[in-house]
Image (cartoon, rainbow, N blue to C red; front, top):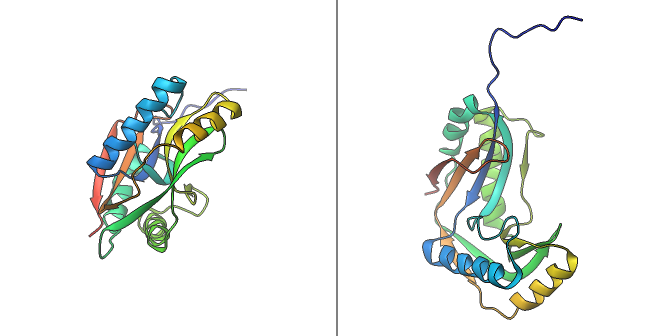
Length: 189
């Protein structure tokens, strides 16, 4: 059977994430916790090389639809900065040590506004992206469950940032399984 060629080259999909980046003082504290994990337990994915953040939404889209995404996120506004409350160290499947972020009405409302903007303004459908419900800041992935429990016990003795305020979200994009190479911030006020 003969294979037909397309008259144009399809645009490769890009991976996108909408996230909250903590303010500099909290960002630096979390980086120190990631470095401590690295020094005590070793280098694992999502560890020292991963920037501190809270993922809100993730999706794959062709790069040529990025302008629609950007325009839709400009519509997401709140009346005041968001308070983020950190509950403490916890674990997340599979084998990931995290700082658990308390779900709040404001965070859920923000996620709903992002969802609505992407559906109404960027033409997404319900199944084209994932909205995070378990908010967290990743410290590191671990080798196995034993190391996860050891690191959880170790880190529960540590101090961690308890709360902070943010007034912006960020859109990051990359080719799948590559380094994030684009970032755009959106003020929420």
